[in-house]
Length: 99
Image 1 (spheres, rainbow, N blue to C red):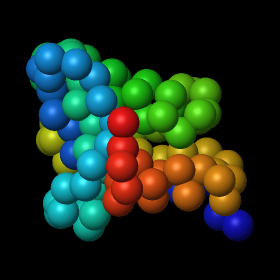
Image 2 (tube, rainbow, N blue to C red):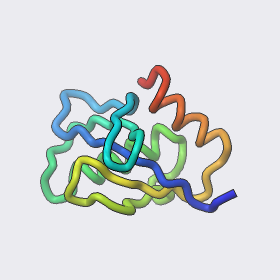
Image 3 (cartoon, rainbow, N blue to C red):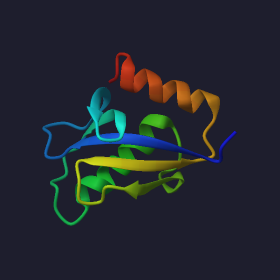
């Protein structure tokens, strides 16, 4: 098993409430939609999305790192040491009924 999992994410900054779930077909392929309260200023939305992704996947925030897309709504995050359950959770959030 790979020791990192790359997760494509579409960030929606300035949302009325934070939410992880849904699919966006973006430049990196099928992406998980993450809505965050933070504005797209000084990396705040990126940091909020990183923490929301970690929380939704049940991993420590330190296990999630931005790989690409610092100034874009379309980002790639790397998750360290993914488990098979983590991959299933990601698929359910992206393609199923995300909350």
